Length: 178
Image (cartoon, rainbow, N blue to C red; front, side):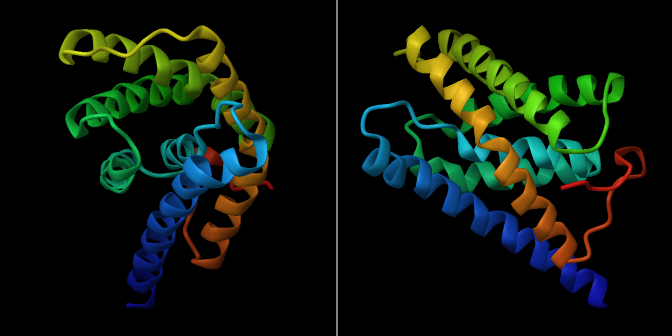
């Protein structure tokens, strides 16, 4: 029974972290850095769920995280879910081919998921939205770079959350190194 409570506590912490990261990204960042594009802090949480959760648990949690992301975005929920499904599929494929535990891999994967997310969103937006997303290369480039730069501190926080809630790591992940 305590293991189930720890799983619920971990899920609650993930959802709370989603709200904190979205709040920091949408308000706090602009108070400090002005008009610089904000990193997609929540995307690092999605990456962590892809890398360190079982596939079914990961996709279910990511879809739940998307429900918490929705109020912070102008993106329709269906487009967000489809984009995250594509990102999940691509990053899971990469994880099966190349993976080692630790913050350096998380940094590189964060850069990769940023590119994957923007490409997937741009394509899906062109297909399904009447007012599709613009390319904005400068803005998107800095979002990707800043997302990768914030990944190491966030990785340490996510690993700490898993340790505090006794969340088991996947056998192929080899444990968590902070």
